[in-house]
Length: 332
Image (cartoon, rainbow, N blue to C red; front, side, top):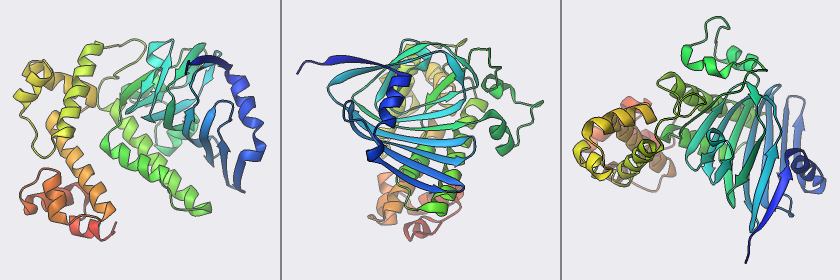
């Protein structure tokens, strides 16, 4: 079937969503508002879930699939809020490179003026967005207006200044929080408190990425794309060989770099060494497997590359403050 191109102004797309009142489910209390809107059948299928966590603080969950159509959205220049975006599946391509996002990436967008842009989307799209007013962010995280950390100053630009965008990889810790948000089992007030806690956790993890190293992708800094691609390739190799990981020398050879380039590049792109990333990935995978409750502790240890159960248990407890056996039993 031949694909057709559809161009939608942002305001027009918003109107299209508003007209689907019969497909909207609402949960409203004095301090909590949740809306689930079915995706317009003219565009595809799926839903958009909007949750107002508090005034000036909202969560959006998108899970939809377009028809065989290349959907393009045009966004006019506008004042941009603080935004934390996590692309779980799919790809958003913008005519301005720094505003593009692909599967497994997270973007942190600061305040300021967003230029006119056009976006095209992949057929399948799953993402979680967080919007928060700058003043509320500084209050929640105890950031003093006159003492903003250098690595966070790009987030707080004046309305007439062009906003900043920094792109990083979604970490395994973020994956856990994203999954818990996606599968939230609660309703009403308990749901609001639970989502607020998980959203704050996600925001803290994402802010830490910018504070711990250089911004990977921003207006005034764009490292060589090939180096970034090689670092992602190295990360994928580590994840695929978690039971028997390669040495750093072997890993460097596999991605076509020297040992020095691998060490430097991995630290810059992911904010930690390859060894630290592997350890963190093993622990997070172990926690997910234990949460599922389908494997014995010894089997989980072997799956994530530990041949000695005692070493695994000690490492797990250092990481999470709880033994693997207690985690398997559902204790927190």
